[in-house]
Amino acid sequence: MHIEIINLHKHFDTQNGRLVVLKDINMTIEWGEFICAVGASGSGKSTLLRQIAGLDHPSGGEVRIDGEKVTGPGPDRGMVFQHYTLYPWMNVQENAEFGLKLQGIPKNQRRERASYYLDVVGLTSFAKALPKELSGGMKQRVAIARALASEPKVLLMDEPFGALDVHTKETMHEFMLDLWQRTNITVFMITHDVEEAVFLSNRIYALGARPGTVRKEIIVNLPERTHHIKRQSVFHDYRDELMDLMRSHGQEAFAAMAA
Amino acid sequence: MNPSSDSFAPQTSAKPGRTLRPTVFWRIAEDIPKPLNWSLMIASIALPLLLWWVVTALQLVDPKFLPSPGTVLATFQRLISTGELQKDTIASLWRVGVGFSLAALFSIPIGVLMGSFASIRALLEPAFGLMRYMPAPAFIPLLIIYLGIDEAPKIALIFIGVFFFNALMAMDTVKFVPKDLIESTYMLGGDRWQTLTQVIFPHVLPGIIDACRINLAAAWQLVIVAELIAANEGLGRRISYAGRFFKTDEIFVGLIVIGVIGMSLDLFFQYLLRVSCRWSSQRR
Ligand SMILES: Nc1ncnc2c1ncn2[C@@H]1O[C@H](COP(=O)(O)OP(=O)(O)O)[C@@H](O)[C@H]1O
Ligand SMILES: [Mg+2]
Image 1: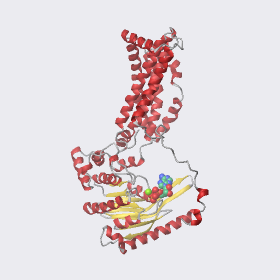
Image 2 (image 1 turned 90 degrees about the vertical axis):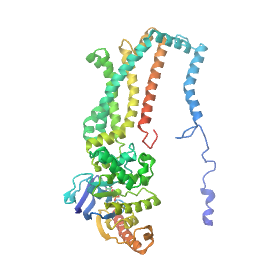
Image 3 (image 1 turned 60 degrees about the vertical axis):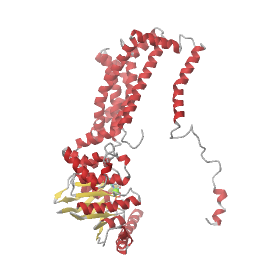
């Protein structure tokens, strides 16, 4: 059982004519995987994620989850956005419960489940805090707990750590790996940060830009996943390969703009 | 830095004396010290009062035209003791209360719907935009023809004057709801109704309170206008009646009471606004 992205095509009709953003995208996500799609900014990553989320509709092709075509958004896919999307007037506990409330789950049950996931992300002691009192990393952890509380099949993440400083980012990476190992959650994350992708995922899709295409699929085999690995040559090899792929995209895009 | 670039330094360095000088009074977009703030706020009311007192005490103006603060205070006490002022105040407040509440009751949900749905916006915005530019007092003759001269035309006037503005301002508040927040709600399993009532509405509530605060001031003006034209009691009617008999002291009493009540309502709404947006990270 898995998620399939089949011949996905997406264009937007703009004032300057038709803009093809995604072309012939084929991907599969098996349950339990941690997958990153890496691409330069503007390569259509967010657009791709929105098609999986059902927040937008493909111009061609389709996304299937367990064989069923995605037609709209729903809580079987947990989403974490780059920008903080906590409800500012609700405290952390209420935020974590909100999805369950929308789904009509009784109060006791949703309190219990939200508390469980707040514990998973290590924020139990902040249950009564308002979002404005939290740091950026904590906000994203609440957003993750909120998504997990619905027990989704997959966690979709759109550059979730893009706005964080380097140290917080590193902590969040370790947190994500730990979370993934403990909960067996499937993660599909998009990012432009090559090291982030190599460090976190077991498989990477490298995207080319304008139009966005799958340039290469890379299986990541690292002997360990601690920050020591970032100094070892295996890690550098993966990173350099991806950097080269992205660099050639940059040149292509530059050539396309100049033409 | 290498020596060759150093030799250019005298020509390229900016003129001295351009350093921003420190100040307390003229700080832009910054707070001033609390004691200074309070002194200035007290002066804002005290200085005009003092000027008024000096002008009348020195008899620079005929007291028939400008009564002294003492005369106005005496008139105020007389009108209170006969109960006339209370009757007028209650009459005006009642009209504003009913007219404004009705307008808010309809304009807030309609405005939020207009802000949320492009379809409803397309249907209503042109008409409302047009109505907004028809000054409410211009409807008075029609309202009198349709509704007579009792309470109905006055309340209708306030309704017209508040409804369209408030709906359009409520509509604008929805613009500030981040799209990500709405889409997050869909991803959490929320339907459109839930998104409207449990996400958009709480998010725009402070903005709506602020819109109501501004439009309540308009309602307060309109009730006075309505009473200047036809009424048996009310603060507006007190002023126009006093004018006919050259009772400038009563006009002053009326004006001051209108001002004080209006400002109290404004302060009340400012308080509601502060309470309703404690969650907001920006200060309002
Ligand atoms: N709704 C839209 N209408 C028109 N163009 C869009 C729309 N959404 C995205 N695009 C364009 O598609 C391209 C890819 O955008 P996006 O998916 O956000 O890239 P990324 O997330 O990789 O930075 C950009 O050039 C962007 O301007
Ligand atoms: Mg993006």
